[in-house]
Image 1 (cartoon, rainbow, N blue to C red):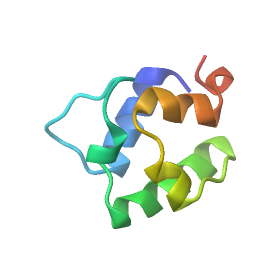
Image 2 (image 1 turned 180 degrees about the horizontal axis):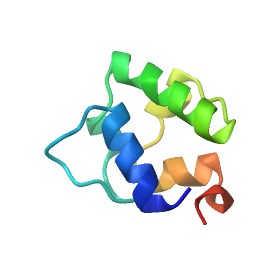
Image 3 (image 1 turned 60 degrees about the horizontal axis):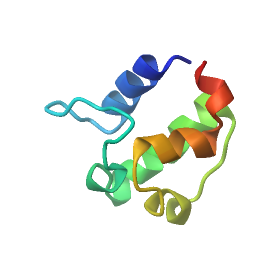
Image 4 (image 1 turned 180 degrees about the vertical axis):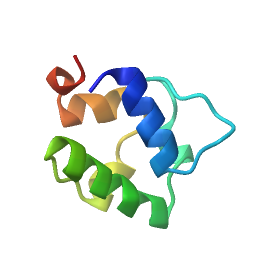
Length: 75
């Protein structure tokens, strides 16, 4: 998946309308207890990577999320 496509899917999953996402976007400002479940499902479904809610709450920005998922999956 290309990064711009990932940002678009992430926006849709997190129901974000007013913010343009990039790698430096603070993930913690975008997620709450309900959206973290949606994000867990998205990552598992699209990338085959299972992350816990605690793991997601420890990821500060989208760049770090991409590294944890695996940068090779975004080229």
